[in-house]
Length: 306
Figure 1 (cartoon, rainbow, N blue to C red):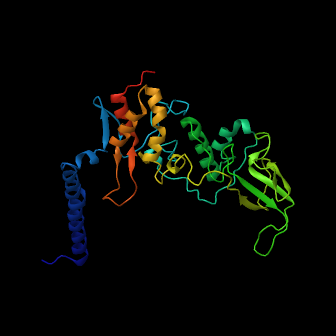
Figure 2 (figure 1 turned 120 degrees about the vertical axis):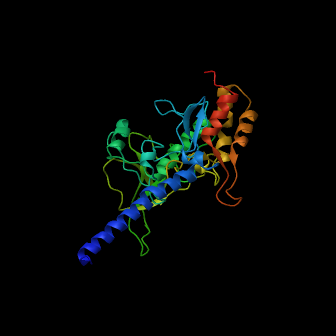
């Protein structure tokens, strides 16, 4: 007896549903699980966890901060690079700041003493340039080197002038009538990083004033082309979870870590070399140092006595 076409179509759909359910809901997950059990892959499938005394302390694929509850760097540890993932290295909020090289003008707080709260409320904001400058200054102070960087003021903000006046056909100011250091706030700095620009006195900036009508002129300054503080010490990765830093940044921190642990710098440098990985396949990417692995080795060999 031949079934009606409507019933035949429904039966075919049910058979297809059952077959695809078995393939995608049973066979495929079991196959992936079996592959994850293969030697060399099981640890990665479990999150590439790193353990100490039988307890997971992190992952070799996800960075973490080595700071005290107030966010201050712990001097006995090599520090990771900055992170824009959530409050820092949050796997649930992975991401970058999405700020580009043209982000050079800050939104100044109305109350400089409460700047952190205004930044959290998004009524104030540091530009990418100022973030880089502030981090470079802080790292330089921590490591005892110059934190000077091109296009940064000595105070650690972006060295950018709003030059106001008549313009030529290309949009450049021909005769400045007013010049403002847009990232140096009145009441925070005693005077701008430069006193005059093309014969015009440079003013500090005031919160709420709009200087966009001026031509934004970044001032390079006298900082070296290759700053003492490496780029990865002042910029976050695209994911915000990068567990590695450059060998240059790791070596910069070696003297400070050695003093805190009471050992020679040479021993810390040797530990850095032990944890340095070369380019992938010999030509992809750059050499790198896994921060967590390095700090665990330092804890094992040279415990911090406090």
